[in-house]
Length: 97
Image 1 (cartoon, rainbow, N blue to C red):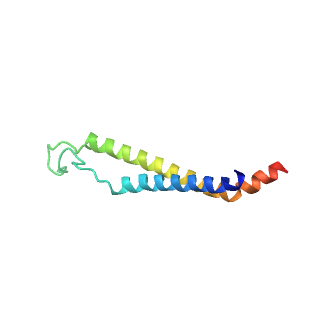
Image 2: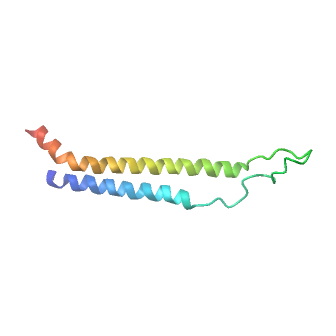
């Protein structure tokens, strides 16, 4: 089992990397379908109310960045697992002896 542990950990790291890359890439490519602002930016005309951001857009951005952070966490964890897989057999052998 120990002889395959490094391969298992490395594979788990690769799977985490793929999941993380897809989460980040999906959020980068996905576009908001709607208006970012409630009205056109006509601030130079007297009496026109200030432009306000669409709450749906704000929520979309919040979700987008949340999913991208999760993706980066998966990527980081996956790379750390791959790094650990290079040393896990040596660590276990040194503990056993």
